[in-house]
Length: 194
Length: 228
Image (tube, rainbow over all chains, first blue to last red; front, side, top):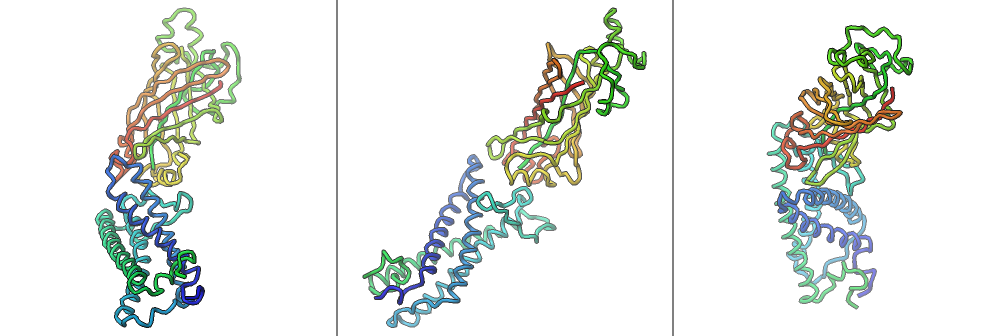
């Protein structure tokens, strides 16, 4: 296969792996911080601040990626792929975009509706002030509402984990079983099949 | 996140009295002439405390009201330390004013009043400093100042005193005692510390009313330098 023809653009590849790294880190970090005991309040607090920072970063990178994707063609799927597999692949990709936008947004809702919100402003990476969403001033039971958003966030995170599993399995299947170029579409030059 | 404040200040001085007017109790008496020895000001004779008067000839000198002291705001500090998620942090109030009428030989007529600008609290952390003025903490929009007003100043040993009085933070007033040391050379230097419980004053509302995230104890320290 010829590099530069049958693959995603360098920008799309860079964004894919950058976002992939962050999302996996967010999932691992999110599960870890959520289960930290109260005795480790300082670590817990700092991890939540970091989680918010990376969450907003993923949101921005996803916007960038969506903009890029809409203005640049993706390489075609192998002609030999059955139609249902093609549809499943497209569906999975759409699912990723939906989750990549929804997860940070729901996280933002959790933070903004929290009873802690007034006392804990968000500073991305300790530097850039990130405002709370303004809808929750008059809410009676902010704790309950924030908790509901947290539940949704959790479900979305588990959906993300499932989708990543499917995505990785499919990529490996294409590479090692079908022996086609689907995985190579998204690999940096060094890892591409000759 | 948050903390408290404190407030108490003190100072003293041994030299003889200038004509500070106790009744006015304003620090504006800087204009008082700096006479060195007993003077001619119209101190009301009735102001002489019985204890001092009973004290022999030397007592005559203390028949005068205690002098007012001018706090050196560039050298005086009002600081506090608290804990957030178990970790200690320090902060300070950059704006406060103290009205100090003090004579170690006339403690009954001595008084200390401190007014703290609650919006001037800074801890070197943006998140905390954003939270401090907010309604769950100092609520500075509603309660811009905290005050300490002494009711009694007692001697506790050599160069050691205790100012008892009422500390008002937000809408809560509580009796507090602030021990302090005092040395007087060409100026008076007072240092003291008091530990406050922030929940006594409603500092930290809602989710922060307990010490889960932010410790309830706040240590407040003051370093006051003043001249007559």
